[in-house]
Length: 460
Image (cartoon, rainbow, N blue to C red):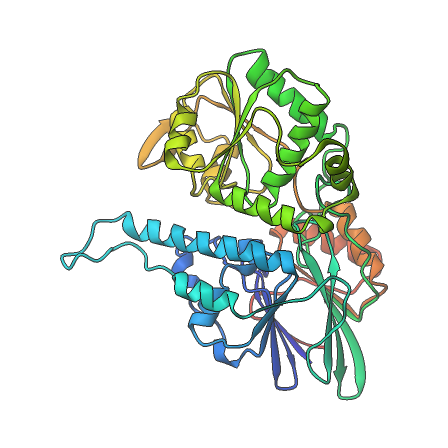
């Protein structure tokens, strides 16, 4: 049995791991690597023949885990993609959105003499996304699925996102049973809407994410307290606006539920809230469809108060005209818009009109990769480029980790310890500092830890 790390190796994005059991090849996740300037060109160069892959296991829908699946299909992969039902639904939304982003990038530069776009060529088109969706085979949580005579798979809930799972593979390797777990991304306890991560079983080998290695989440303030504080400062003490960049899938639904609870309890006077993201509207429907998988708090709220994602003074913005009307709304308000790292989507329009507004606060609630506009603002850049224009930053920039979907250092340690004493723990999906911090802590607890390089191969 052989394991090769082809993505999220000593970096955060682009998750992709190749497990070979004899001649059978399984790819665990196939995410977009968007940490390089030339990511569209980089992502279409697979280090193996896509047609040689027999199966893909998808841990969850986020684009850094799912976003390169259509490229894999376009270049010859014709096997199944195994995932949970919500992951299939949410991934479909994200992949179609990726096509739109590719097409917009291609159209930004002038056309050639033949009338073709001269921008970067799309990685894939709608047809390739449809071909990918056709390959989805959904498996419920905690229901063993026999892949072949030697390999079975179980999905264990890990929070983080609706449908997110750790993949537990039980393998007969030449008469010897071996278990290997891939955590995907591990969530945190008591997160709005999402269930707590289930304990992982004991395994022989573990591939764990390390996003928050060496870092702890804020403990001295609740999410409710922080949101009340930010809204009070931005919208009540001064007649301003609070803009919250939020990923349309996952983060927005949890934020909306948290705001619903705040205003239901009348902790603040009514304030208009806009969710400006058609994709968030689609994703919210998926959350409603799979309501049996939300946490007990959300289920109880639904029974007593109604829909977690609908309340007075909340408006979902669908069309571009409606979005422009939000820009012209001059009363205090909260605007939730995507994308979370500010690299695309309608959030850029709201930034364009508000980045030089002293009465505007921008509250980041998630991770921003190096090189993104969000990262630059969080790093204190006094001037940023938005829509081909250099703009001074006068808006107030704040950040909180209270809506981070990732477990922190202690959560990661707890999850890894649940798996007993694996022969080896592989750490991926983290910046160098996080990887090294988590590795050191685990080694001090007696674990055999590896932080693999891209392309590094391990015989298991």
